Length: 271
Ligand SMILES: Nc1ncnc2c1ncn2[C@@H]1O[C@H](COP(=O)(O)OP(=O)(O)OP(=O)(O)O)[C@@H](O)[C@H]1O
Ligand SMILES: [Mg+2]
Image (cartoon, rainbow, N blue to C red; front, side):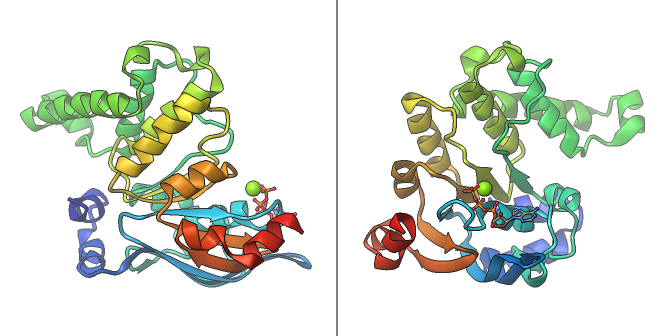
């Protein structure tokens, strides 16, 4: 199931399929450093996320979490080091092409189309991904295109249901409170089966019920996920592994239970 995500979508399946073959990491961050003048926002950061796992990135303010997200999503080139997605070195690949290859990111400040309905927001995310066959297909109405359209509509309803948004499908996104807009953004990110999902503070603005729902959704996905989050209860619940940053350095990695008891982590948070 995962193989057709990497292989089938960007039309250059070869590399993805090959890298997919083994137990290779879905995401590998290798010795990444980022400096802003004299500030070392990230220093020699390395970690891997195995396919299908949820990895949380935590750390005190200024630890480098957002900078790390920017590097993984391609918004910022690291000063040194590299990023591999499904075995492929994407360090020099611009953000928009990483997105086309199946990387999806949600933002701390939600980005949805306020003047579209919830359902159309999700549909638009799929349209953007393309694959429609172009103008000729539009004019000739290829049966395959109509079939694809049906599949898309079905997928939209599936994703809406997954995110608990079915009843809001016809509401304008702008009319929703921030918690629900965040779920719409998640639905958009999930619409076309991303191969790698980055969630930036996904629980911010959500109430307890929505947070619990989000946790269930994230847990239920096969998608490799990297998330930055301040809500420790959520992180400990949802993540398979954690990477702890402090002052740009990885100070601990491990399963939540290990991290909870780690003296260096406690010191970083208390200190
Ligand atoms: N564009 C920039 N120019 C200069 N310094 C920056 C820039 N972006 C980040 N920094 C610095 O890099 C360090 C890491 O910042 P970053 O925003 O990645 O931390 P963070 O872990 O996301 O923090 P927070 O939890 O407050 O969001 C901080 O010292 C920050 O001041
Ligand atoms: Mg940040």
